[in-house]
Image 1 (tube, one colour):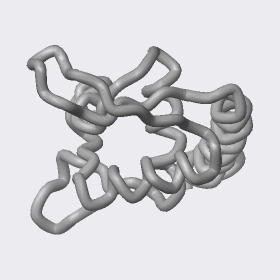
Image 2 (cartoon, one colour):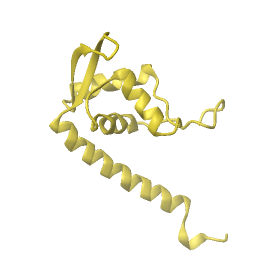
Image 3 (cartoon, helix red, strand yellow):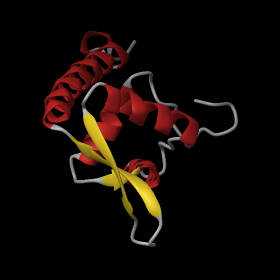
Image 4 (cartoon, one colour):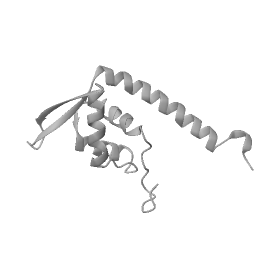
Length: 118
């Protein structure tokens, strides 16, 4: 966590891809909407900065996990909308599984059952 704010959590390297893929599971979205969805669903604990979001979107597109097209937003402005591809859905399942194993391992290390009371 940063020294300035203990209310937000810094993203671990590699988790941004998972967050983007999971967000797009709900349907197409433009970059700003993706960032806002992550912030809102994490109860403002995660905030994705533009400087991290757009390179990640380009990287995921290059891998074929998402596709992008220019469309008009609800406000009538031209925006790049991103969609999850079939390959992206498979990758989401893989990344989610890895995250769940990592999360379980961290829980075991941080809260070892055999060392309670020490």
